Image 1 (tube, helix red, strand yellow):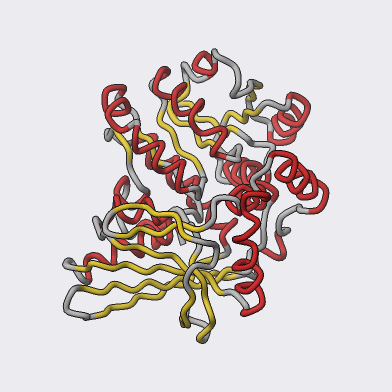
Image 2 (image 1 turned 90 degrees about the vertical axis):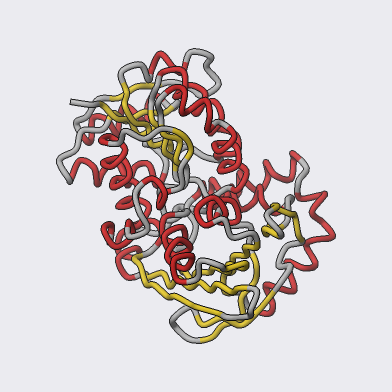
Length: 340
């Protein structure tokens, strides 16, 4: 039987994935750098464990007999590259649950090495970016000559500690959109528009979501923006914050905000997750000005990260593909239907 690993199984999403895997009768190896917490999870779930740090030069030795890693230890801007390099060395398929544009671009840059090693590199196998990636692909089928793609989602799932830290890191970088095929930096809340995500029209603003990278790979559409709902007050605050981005990026400020997160952010509990839904919306436009829309409703983002991540592990254990992929290109654009 092929072995697979959850790295970061002591984090919020990693632990949820591990617990659900055991409920489904699967046998993951749980791993991470914190010996005490990994051993506690291993004992609780009655599964094997491994303890290693991603700053270790010999990560690959811990992956030698592992077919698939689902990497759940963020911030992925710091942890993805050492794990990807180790997976290429050990010939282990790499999945993660990132939503960071820089990580998707990084993984894509290793496409040829992954093909040579015979392994899959597929970041974003959670809420970031399975549903929006499937939606983008379906919209491309509706309008093959689309020149503009706009995606958005309305979710009240709240933040896990890892997601909150990633958001803090992103404040200093501002926003991102894709224009004429290139990813460009824009200010925070650079653009606003009214959008009906499927639950009534709301003011929404642009965010630097992973699809700015992945949806271009999936569809080839050269102009891409992603939106979430935002109050007029929040939009004003973020626009003012653009003048302080240099300060927000300073190390001591980042450390202060992340320590606050460690003390105060826990992530939604099971009851909260079960009640929450996510509304997804997408729009394509071509040079003639024709427009087509799609809307989807899914479970909350963290539940989808668990079910989606496990579905992608199951698929990757059987795959014969190699190279860089997005979720819908590794499986198909009906993947969300299979998960939900």
